[in-house]
Image 1 (cartoon, rainbow, N blue to C red):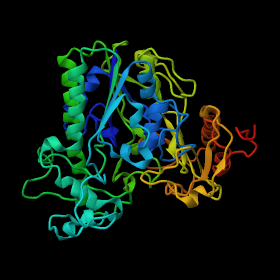
Image 2 (cartoon, rainbow, N blue to C red):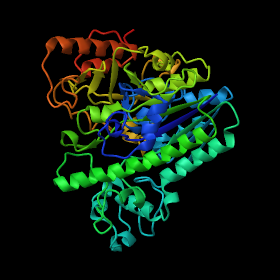
Image 3 (cartoon, rainbow, N blue to C red):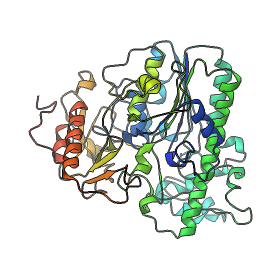
Image 4 (cartoon, helix red, strand yellow):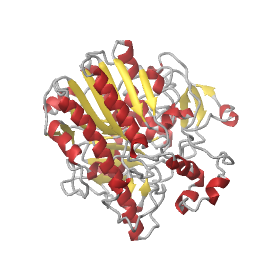
Length: 509
């Protein structure tokens, strides 16, 4: 048995033809995949953004209640590592540069082998003499070609991104191209062998929206190129033309993603791999392209464009193709699904469920799913209703429970660590008392929702108007509280979000 996962970052569900027949994009390979696989209509995130979602991809349990952005912890059960220990080779081919920053330090080593291709976004890859840290290189300042919008991205590493782009002198050097070339090479060398898992993971279509000219040429006239391709995580303030052109940049990148996916499907066709090879195509979350008057992610309520994700799976054991499933599934279900496919025991600490029976006969694996950012609003859905619970008392801190004291691209500061204490073990920490550190970073999302909201997606799929239904709100709040208990949420979570204060927690017990 073999398994392939093709994972994207910030892939929009509603632009794929299997979810939107009127999509303006030409995505023949996503359409072709839907005809060969099971399409999940109610797939949702759990923890956001990038690395929290990837920790769940390894561990099969929610991340955001205990930790923000961070590495795999010493007590974590890692799906690819479990495969490796069972004699099943796990390979990661990626251009997701967050894996090689401080906050992704322990992910790649969980695979039997891995490669990371450089140059996406603000990756500290290319440089010029005189450039340092967040300062602009004199060379770049003198360059007449550097777009003004990159100069405005000083804090986001705009000069780094510009420098990286200069190194992409051929279509084959795009990071996504190199990532898929690695994956295709692995397939070709190993299609005659059993017992391997390949994860082809691209940073695209994450911003900035850069793709080869042959894809952008469909959307922009050669004599009228559109330059800005890096939307901020902020309210939309640009004029209508700029908004539409920015979307077109994303559309071009989506079509590039589709072309690379086609190479994987071609290999599976040519080598007759469908009979014994699982294929999972997924993403970590979506992205706002002006909907609800927002760009990006994180700074706005967790609307459907961000949290309702595409998921397509081919499972040769079931042989189900061209069918849809209505059961509610989440990111945490992918690790147990892969382990089950290889006949391995699913660790007891994994809260996700294998989707084998959901694929074969739409058997539900849960009634409700929670999702959100660490320290931010907690959301819950049953696939129809979405309830967003705001922070009720921001004076109650969110805490980091960890033994890996790094943020996205830095270590915890001595000032942060001066506030450390030891917490009692959680059930999933295998007897280890984690460090408990008040969260000083990563909470920029906590105040984005001032009051609780309830949406009925059946009547209001675009979430234009929250509704007032005290009975339904109470029902969803009760379900949320039950899931907090199941996930061993720290006691301060209940106080922070206004749940009853007498709930027994792992420390109170």
